[in-house]
Length: 296
Image (cartoon, rainbow, N blue to C red; front, side):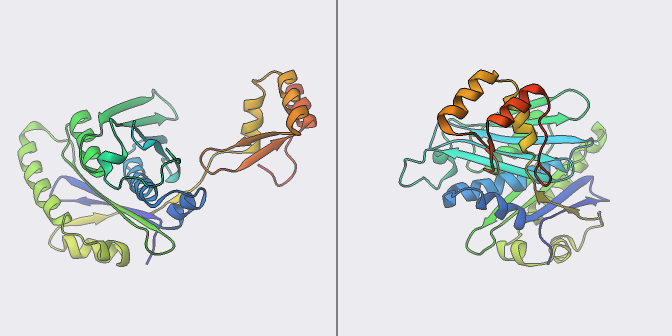
């Protein structure tokens, strides 16, 4: 069965759209980048599935960032997703703690969910909602209820017991309609939401996507669109790191090289490390920095 794919579908008679994503290699790539504790791995999986689902709702080229900020053991977690389903993410927590709480509300205390939409052309939009519900999925549903007044169902699941790890998600949402059609759409949504809630982990993690949709919605008229590939991809590069160093004075950079031997820059997402020596510093500030063949 195929993982790392997003499936979009439309209920032709129900004025409801649906999505399902199942991640494996793309999720494992994030887990391999840093030794995250299991509860953080689970949250990153849920965030990653959610980012893929929400990115699929974009009607333009751009990206979405789903970010959690809190004052509890977890201080920060974010997944960035592009319109073509390239995802990356990172989390920060109090690594001095021997154990972490497993309940969402205790892990993320006084938290907020921030969703930032950045089109390649046009204005950036940012929405925020309190993390005051028992699960991330319910908080995302609350976000859509607050920001767009659209009935939304979100299911987020992770499986860490087997390698590679898996993260899956499902998304239902009422399509914007005229006021006279709203009542029927809400009724259709409630019916489809109740059906979707019957999905079992064993089915979501093990059955082919088409079998899952047939199992849930065999009595519905569904239009299924071609699947979209989902990948882990970080946008960092040595060239971008060099551009960041160009904003720092040359003498300051050379002092660091003299003290430490080189300048090391580490990507917070994939933890790739880029090193720069004195020759690199000189060429960066002369505007002649070129990457060796094969580096990027």
